[in-house]
Image 1 (cartoon, chains in turn blue, purple):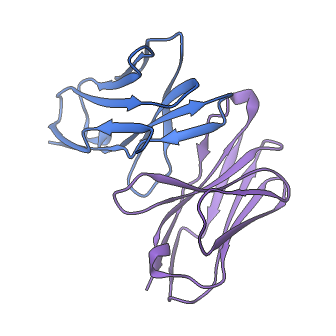
Image 2 (tube, chains in turn brown, cyan; image 1 turned 180 degrees about the horizontal axis):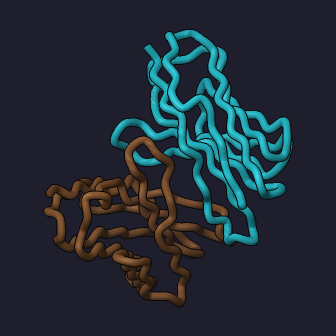
Length: 112
Length: 113
């Protein structure tokens, strides 16, 4: 069983709408959690990074939350744009931070 | 600033042929280097990582190998490709003073026919 589970597997929304992606993890000991955006045919790019003591972090229209007690994170996208169409990958680091566990990603499609 | 390069961008190879993918990093010293494979519609699978020249750790046993002949050069190789080797190959680097955040290259799309 993967130590990082993401849901939904895929999501289609209309331009301008909001959406929330979920990430549940069992990785231990927890170091940090990152959300990456991966455009088709490109390498992933980091959106946010959250440590144990942080429960909310924003990057423009992207807001990530972390509940270290329940081991859950979410990525909320506000006022979606066509360029938000991508895969969003949740990555949880263990130990001193160099042991990274990847979720399978959520494939988001924003339609006009 | 740091940059990471991968080449080629795309590659079509017949089954049984050899493979060599190269990754180089500029603007940083002694990075950790990683090779990942991503099958179509799937998540990232760590193949190899290296913490220094000549130091390679393999995560998944397979017909692939990796080498690090220089501090900022990481090479992924195979003597004989299999159909199952098709996928998107990503190289990444990280350093301690950036919290080991991984920075990814543009990737190589490999199709084995």
